[in-house]
Length: 276
Image 1: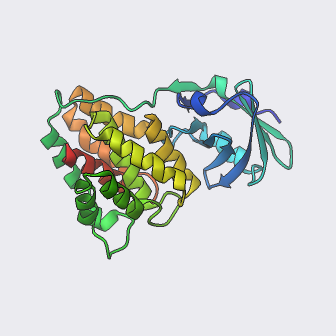
Image 2: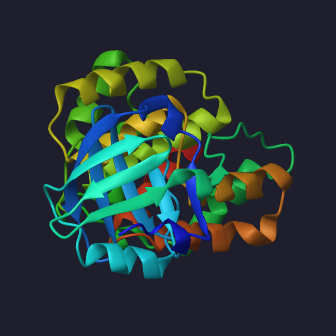
């Protein structure tokens, strides 16, 4: 069954060509209620509905098409990527998704300055988030403890210690500590933080050691490559153009992702802004 003719709308990340190559073989690794992941040699590829935010590591297609695919797609199904098409070998037939039909979205982390939006206003906008109430780490830690820990990481040894605390800490598909890392790294990259390279090097070393979920590893890897989610790009562009009235809605848009992932990502972002 070829599903291409139903694929009128959808988007794809412009990061994909860096890690997805013609005739790559993969396997469906995880299936969720409204999306699924395919593990390729260099990429954990996410297929989600258009109502979701596009991630740096995948595509979005119509919600109806995703729901139809999920009736047959199962963990362990073999996948072939060839000539910009995904061939998913389900138990019933071969499902085909054409990536050439999708609109490519630039998910590179944009370079941002405070020429249009003062830093103080950005930091103040985060007051709408109750981090202590909504974040994903246990009550024995406080968001401020994490903020302070990152602030105090001035040497590679201190940065490594902080990352060891955060990496893989928490439950779920993307543990809270990993979401904090992604949020912080994305903002530091966007703002050209002076110690960005040092943070990137330490994060890369920690990533190579493993110890968290495949999904978290893919998001951290994307941030190291200089790519992020569509919602994060939208937030940064609001700052770029000085649309101050749109900052809080953009923040709330990021929070509305996963159970606590959005809030945890925002805590990392907030921390990064307070480091500048």
